[in-house]
Amino acid sequence: RAKQDGRNQHAFFTQEMQAQSARTLQLESALRNALSQGELEVYYQPQLSVDGQLVGAEALLRWKHPELGFISPAEFIPIAESSGQILRIGEWVLRTACAQMQRWLEAGYPAHTTMAVNLSMAQFRAQGLLKLIADVLQQSGLPAHCLELELTESVAMHKPASVVQMIRELRKLGVRLAIDDFGTGYSSLSYLKQLEVHKLKIDQSFVHDINRDGSDQRIVQAIIGMAHGLGMLTIAEGVETSEQLQQLTLMGCQEVQGYLFSRPLPAAEFDALVRGKGLLPMTSQA
Ligand code: C2E
Ligand code: MG
Ligand code: MG
Ligand code: MG
Image (tube, rainbow, N blue to C red; front, side):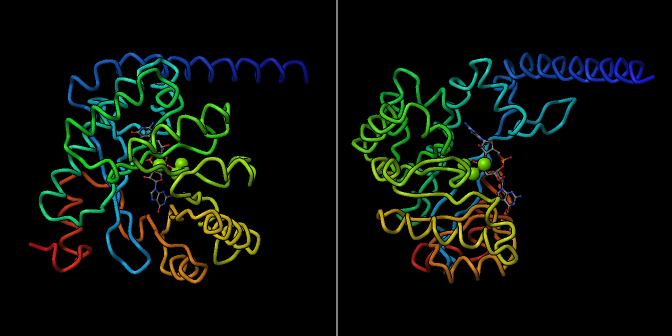
């Protein structure tokens, strides 16, 4: 009986795994044509100072497959990474997002507004990243200080010495750097000090229960204290309620991003929201 159950379970897992790898293969192959078929689009989510002014946007990639519908980045980004497609797709995101922010600056957004773009490990490690960034800035006309590159804490933790060096080189280009999903990795204070990034993005998992969970509250307080001690800014991700906003403000967090303000939106809707909600200073509303 037990043996029988075991066998059934085994068959069940095998089926699950087969279905899973069939989907991965299907997505991997569909992704090869997604860009040329116009199935990829960059969405933008506003980043605000706690007093409600627009400080930037984060570029978040969306894939709408003709039959499968929207596929989550949580599913397709890892596939793009493991199949090596992230280099090509990531470059397109960079070019698209920088060109978009340059148009918005020309249309009156404040001169310091930033465009945050996520970089995968493979992109960060690729030969020619510096040249690519320099080229993207030159082609788009976007001032270097308006581009912010987001690295996850796990990318930053991998081969620390070379990461420190690459961050220095990127800083020389004048771009800004942020550590994404901060608090989920294990970076030490001394390492963080060497990283010389401009901003820490407090992971949304700590923000979620910040009004209820004392230990999440203390973790966020510690991250903010550490960041400020090192001269870095903090932004909280995943802010969904005004209570969370209030708590984060009280704790000294400077910037926020989340569904409370807006979901990630297509460019035109982002601009309509920003103008409709009056998130730009009066002088920029032309
Ligand atoms: P991330 O960079 O940490 O982005 C934050 C994620 O949280 C986004 O999910 C965003 O839509 C979501 N989010 C924003 N506000 C809220 C909120 O208030 N509540 C909740 N529950 N979620 C919120 P998304 O767009 O599905 O992206 C997931 C991840 O995929 C990103 O995490 C990033 O690591 C990766 N990703 C997305 N676009 C790109 C890209 O162009 N390149 C690379 N390399 N990775 C990307
Ligand atoms: Mg990010
Ligand atoms: Mg994040
Ligand atoms: Mg994340």
